[in-house]
Amino acid sequence: FYLLAREQAPRRLPRPWLWGALLAYACYLPLRSLAVFAFHPETFTPLLFFGMCLCWRKRRPGWAALLLVLLASIRETNLVFVFSAGLFLAVFERRPRLGGLLMTGAAGLLAFLLLVAIPWYQGSLPHYVYLTRYDWLGSAPGEILANALRHPHRVLAFMLQPTKLKFLSNLLLPLAFLPLLAPRFLLPALPPLALHLASNYGPQSSVNFQYATDIYPWLW
Image (tube, rainbow, N blue to C red; front, side):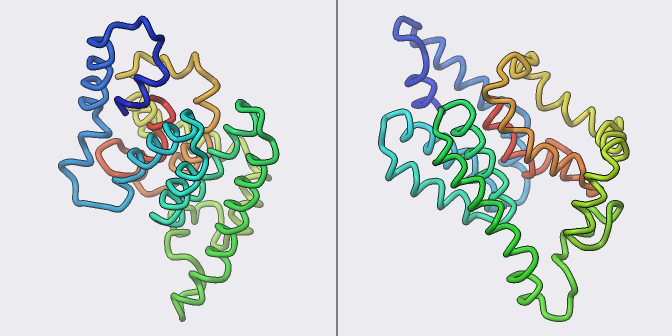
């Protein structure tokens, strides 16, 4: 995080300001929760993401690609994070081909895992077990997606419940809501954020667990 902040900061910015930013990041509640909660592979997501961004800034695409692959291999839902990276490249870095390739590849691989690979591996279970977190929309991936698109008002009402709003506040309040002024980085955070807000599993919309690791790196 510090190396990336130093790379992006104005050259005349005093070094203590960078150390202050590092201290603020270290005190960020979602990050501190990773240190006190049981270990999960998602813990590596922010580290790999910041490393990927640093390599991209230093024009080392090979290393950036390697870190992106490692990031995607942590768990299947991190493919949503890869989709966000593609969205960022396509919209803000003016790399539509590369961004489109990442978005298409991430969406296609996630669909394959959810519809083919994971159900086959689970054997008698009909669908991806974590889909039960979205069973208020349906029981199968296609049904969940179709109902979400058919009833956006219902989805929005679910996402604006008090516990969900508290989750958003806990993410943004320590940052003085400044990410709302930076759509360049807020937009890529929306896909994983929507995934968590639409879940009926409480810890998934809480900063006290590991689930927010695919959201807050974009906010910083």
